[in-house]
Image 1 (cartoon, rainbow, N blue to C red):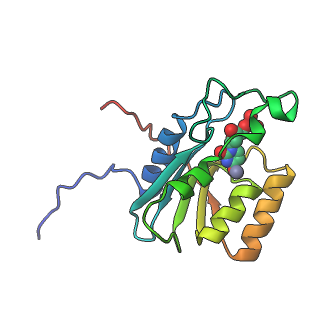
Image 2 (cartoon, rainbow, N blue to C red):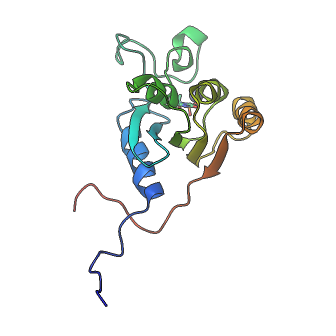
Length: 163
Ligand SMILES: O=c1ccn([C@H]2C[C@H](O)[C@@H](COP(=O)(O)O)O2)c(=O)[nH]1
Ligand SMILES: [Zn+2]
């Protein structure tokens, strides 16, 4: 019998792709919540990535990152969400049947884009806004549209950038 010498402690697909989503979130300039997304094909190929930030041409130094204040003076009207950026960053055609790894449960606006793009599975980490209308609406739409979602299960493994 031939015994394989392969490593046994390699990371799982979920650890791999959630790791990429988390790494992507580290590009965000949002001082409060950094969100990263990674879109993956049904056969586990990375198709696109994104993080939350202002649109091209809208300088991080000129637009506000505040959470409070008048609508025109805080970030919410200006930020492109990580999931939408990942969808828009994709250059390859259809995302039908793809999976989305994302560090924060998608809001209702992202949910609409996700459903319309044909993404069928969402693996999320934080659900810190679960009690808010945007996330309740998002889950309602995912349930109606047959988009499956499940929480990423953390392992006790630390994934480091240095080896
Ligand atoms: O679906 C979502 C929801 C939110 N985001 C981004 C938008 C903002 O930059 C932050 C949330 O900021 P808070 O200070 O926690 O309100 O997250 C996203 O990318 N995707
Ligand atoms: Zn969103």
